[in-house]
Image (cartoon, rainbow, N blue to C red; front, side, top):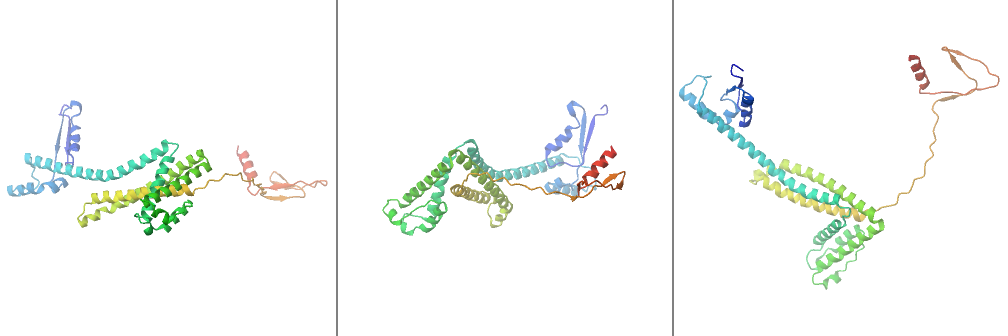
Length: 343
């Protein structure tokens, strides 16, 4: 410490000025004396990429020998400018990544809001009713577009309703008399589906039905969300290729990502509605207890007995008596005996 404290020797400059300042700070901790000195080469990555041409040209013009030490304010300023460029480049990279992550973050907010709503409420029947209306609306828009009943594809709509066991009777003549045929069809199908939903809940029981609804909802939601995350990862890996067509990859990622998210939400609602209408609950009956027969392990020998004493086999005849000896194939008796002898 009497000689001037700790002296720091740096062989290169970091891309970030913050790291260099931290290294300098090691030489003068808590007011202690210290000093620092950095040595750079024009072939270092920082100087080679961001500013060595001007300095090397100046050295050639001044005819300086190779290895000559240069101490100049101009060199220090050139290094500082190079570090600022690198820091700005790294900041742009982080900002770009944050913009990509913001797309997934917005989608994550929607999914977790829906999931928390299911977890916090014991009765999610209003949410399911909304899903039923949206599913019916999508089917009607797909198969029965416009207000001309003659152009409707009623067979496809009937096939979909039969899959949910709605027993729906649709007559084309009935809706021709209405002012808004498509709206009248929606109200009829939607009311029929809701009546079916309510009757199924009463048949199974309110308490069991509430628990069943939540389990089905959460299971399908988690499964579909994981699939959507995988799809978004694949999209992000290959979205850079749209740059060849002079389009912004970030903008295309946002557009395609939200289209995929809308499709995933629509498929989620359809799957939940289809599963709820098709699920069946049966009472668990006790299964009859099976009588297990335990088989004997080993060989059974009858007629006489054998004595083992001192390692020799001695036979003795008995007066009309017989002893049954069972020898185990596993050799458990020998192991126990050997353990006792070791003790």
